[in-house]
Amino acid sequence: MDRKYVMTALGYGLVGLLMGIFMAHSKNHTQVVTHTHIMLVGLVVSFIYAVCYKLWLPATPSKLATMQFYTHQFGAFVMLISLFLLFGGFAPESVMGPILGISTLSVLISMLLMKILFIKSKPKD
Image (cartoon, rainbow, N blue to C red; front, side):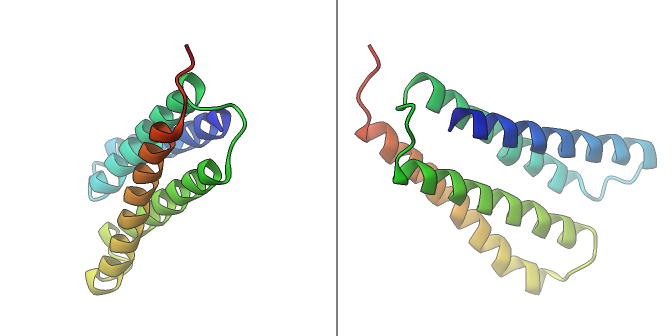
């Protein structure tokens, strides 16, 4: 699971950096919120989860670990696309607001599942 998280973290990092480079070059910073969320939720949180799996959680993924991974990926991806559409002016807040709420809830649930995985795990002493 740690490798899956590193791969997705690096993917989000590349997208976030490319967006940042584009904004700097174009001098159009309307997507700064999207860029920030890609870098934080996509890169940083995913990488922290990778470290958690590598250092503390069992190597063989459980159903709960698989659910935690896909819940985070769903939430992060939907959040980032929704923010892009909202701040790019492609969709109104009345449409994107509820979708962003669902994606945020998904990211929150994935963090709660990570906490449960930690509570259930045995220390690797």
